[in-house]
Image (cartoon, rainbow, N blue to C red; front, side, top):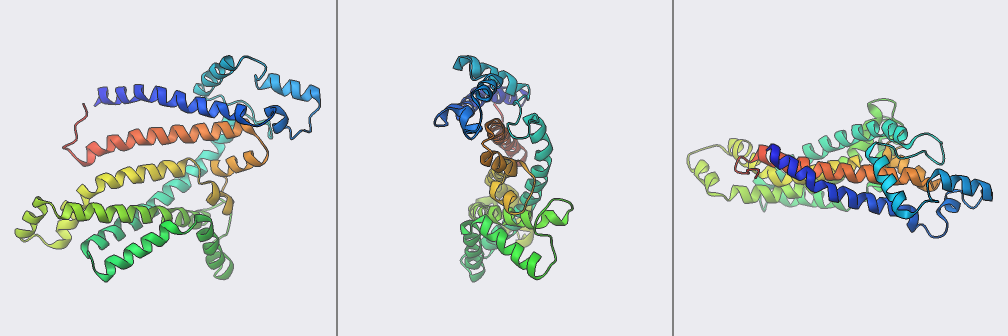
Length: 306
């Protein structure tokens, strides 16, 4: 296990270097002079030159990249053009909000998705099965910003049960978590259903059924655990995506996470912040992928780490 984890971590090095190179190119892919773009063509020639020196853009490109990688590895992403604060501090302040929302949304998604998927599989080709999958398809198809606005309209403006925006209390978390969780739950429900149907057709399930095991015990004790292996993968990826910043939902609900930070940075042309957010999101995604692979072994003892 230790050797497997060490080898996977070594394999991540070229992946992370490739991601850092693409993020680094963000500055140089901006049409025109990136410094003038960040200053919105409003800076004097002295200000342009000063910012170019501050960002290190006056040095050879390979030196810029090496410096970017070394500083990023140390958690130094420079200073925000807009707020003048260190970007690492900005992200450290925002990311707990995004983690809180991602955890809540994932709990909603897993609870809804696994239950709906298991019910659909247990009532295969029945009205309940078709109805559940129609709900799942609708959940996947509906844009999250539209669903979020509907929830605000119903539960905030008409019923006045929940606040429409902000992050001051647990009540502020409910609507964005449901908005994000519903979309993810639809994917999990469809995957749980297909995985459950495959597991329920296995010989050991038929044997357990022939021995008189009740349907509820058969499903929850034997089938569901083995059906969860592919589901864990999609749950991990969904969680990583949410941690990377649910940009639209954070904007709709005024949630101060890193997705909202990215949107603000785009509008203010704050390229150091955009670079840092993209890099952090990508790194989170890569390490969540590794964590999901390790969880496979806990769910299925047949999987051995070589």
